Image (cartoon, rainbow, N blue to C red):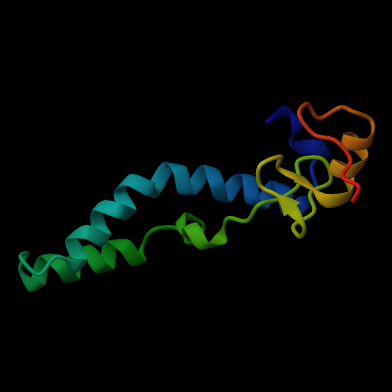
Length: 105
């Protein structure tokens, strides 16, 4: 939490979403299983559905997006490096990323 002061606001929001999702993931999956399983009685499935709706909105996995660790950019992020195009390119040209080199053909 110390490094949050230097992060852009969207990166902080994404960090919080990831923490909330991680906290609620097991409960969410269990409720979804109960809700979709026809072997359970209708009342139990509707109860699971209402509990699922009461979970925080940040608990949805669709709210999590890859962001650049250096700049906080949300587009053009290479998931293998967790960096955006240009900062990654600069690091590759300075030979700071092992196992990569500039491509020329």
